[in-house]
Length: 373
Length: 228
Ligand SMILES: Nc1ncnc2c1ncn2[C@@H]1O[C@H](COP(=O)(O)OP(=O)(O)OP(=O)(O)O)[C@@H](O)[C@H]1O
Ligand SMILES: [Mg+2]
Image (cartoon, rainbow over all chains, first blue to last red; front, side):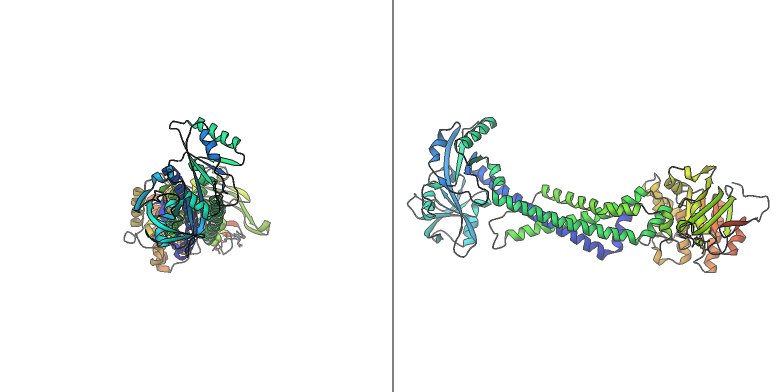
């Protein structure tokens, strides 16, 4: 017989109670997995979008409240182009717009002929011919959500646009978006001559040190502006930051409840087994083995909860991804890394929940525990 | 093994379970401890088994005071075997597993633990009941499992507190036969607390207790302590 056999048989002694505790842990871990998966997936999606665009640096106005940075004058483009290592500058305007019945959709206005278009694959139709044309292209996911095809009309704010093409990008944030030419979006949102992002491409071979110098120079030249690398934009997006903070708070709460559940169960089973612990001590078990027995019990409990919770969490993300409201907006990341995080969290909970009961159990005086019936 | 002026008080001195018990048990002896209820027999056994500390006096094992032993758990695991009135088997484990519980303290691999448990259960006549859980065994069978468990690590001292107290007279007789045989075969010291005069009849020596003291010490075989 293995030591683990004793542990498992103890847990199976009260299957309903063990199962309920396991469920408590599973729900906590599922919340962590789902929220983290969405947060990581969202960040990853933006990173992939910027990487696919070939954007080295993004210049934008620093905002703290709004999820979209405020528009600013396009006139800074010429100045940006004169700065060292800057090869290309593309302005873009983005907004969250409610289109017809559907929930909000991300709408981009991109400069006609700019480098941003290069990474998109046309699946159907054609690109907008010029900036006069009132046409729009839809990402594959957006086309699906809005139920539009080539030739149909989408209404953005007060403007009506004919869908001239459907495209596919590597990144969900773009696949779920509608793209107009920059002048058309500027006009319909009354932001003539304004953009809210500049995408910069730098000379090939620009060193990290030169990049840092450039960022400092941009910040110095344009107060209130900032220059981010692709990875940092998502990290600095206030909406993502709020979402992450919320997900952490929720996770922490869920985990705390889980840990208290484990502690309660294990403590109860220690009290129930006071007499049994006395017997074990009488037949020569060391106190350290009693500690190990109790800690293992709580860790097996929470680890199984962690595995069940991970499965539950990943299933929840899949479900959320296909829900009508969130479809095309979130993309859960289901990675071994996240699974490892979930299991370590569960194991930590088990340790935390088992420590006090183990301490109590191992401190019982053997003679008295034996008399206890 | 020797008890010197053993005292044990409970509840801040209001209860005096032992009031200076003195005796010597020689190695390999079979000693019965008798006395009315409340005379301190169980308390005495717990002190001999290092499960409790005396309020006064001391217990010596092979000349060394138990109070000076650093690793009491190790002492209990390797040197002692305990048998209780109500068996105290772990309900979730099978007979073979129950016998293996004390073996975790020994450096034996799982296969050897299993083999030893099977051999011990065969020795107590339960070779056919290895995978039965305590609930599916009779009282006498449970006590046999408990005896096999007490022998798990090859103890030199076996302490039994009313091992036949919960059994009918037929099972009790068999358990006594078994204890007697084990004592004869393995030669360990055996101390049995009992109300049962038949147990006392089989022991070489009987200590009688009254009010926390040893009041008589009868050697049935005068001048012939068991050799080992
Ligand atoms: N932990 C304890 N706290 C308080 N009193 C105790 C404790 N242990 C034993 N006693 C008291 O000490 C006295 C002796 O108890 P003990 O259990 O040793 O008697 P015993 O001889 O084994 O009796 P029995 O034959 O009924 O088992 C009793 O009066 C008992 O109530
Ligand atoms: Mg007693």
